[in-house]
Length: 323
Image (cartoon, rainbow, N blue to C red; front, side, top):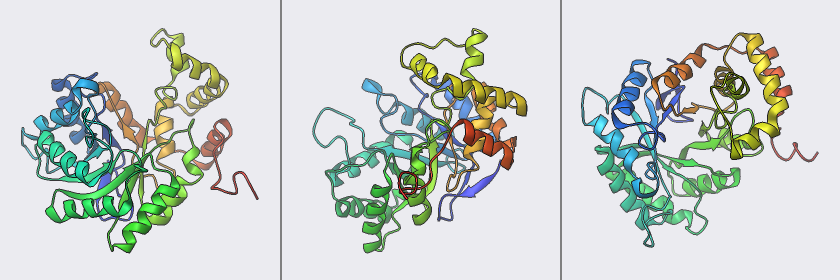
């Protein structure tokens, strides 16, 4: 396993981040525990979750599954860089979501209880809260750092402008501010190259791409359809229809390179500026092993240029759309 620093920090994390969103809704607790054990065996030390995972009436269930795994001991907690998120509504009453100082205080304590740990390594804001001023957010986060409840702060689904505002407000307070940004980023969805990636590079944030296979579209969906392994319907079928020509070219190119399409998609992300670790969210052990396999894929400049032809990217703004 390769390791790298998370943005400008001294924290070293694996080049793959284990996403846990499937734990609970799609993966039973014993299987989730096995996946986490094997992730450690493979050298993955970076796990991501969120307080809302488990969803609906089961919100918080995923953190509980991870907490029960930590409670087994054996160095599980000590070897894990755990990142969780707040923002989503955890109940029906006011102040049970978003980024008010009150919710930040309550949410971190609830996550700590579910995770059965005394601190969270990276506490991430799951979404921008346009109604809460940065002075309030940073004051609340500073208190949590001083109390030892969190170590680093991250963002998720922020625009470049949000990152800039956050960092300038933190700088005025002599606070470290954001250390990472989780964004939707893959070969099919490259819009963060316009402003989010430049902002992350400028402010020294590590980028953690989510949905690296774009819901499975970059994992060989056309071949799986032909083989009867996967059937697409609804929005997924619409997406396949929209991108069929690109996906055909992509899967043909992956076959030419001798790699699985999903491996190419992950390997490509690892070449992108500011990217620390894509989030892989396996439901099964086989999916975890497939993700780790991508670390052995090397893409030369010719291969990267061909991928850009199939999935055109963006130049930084404003040059992408102006002079």
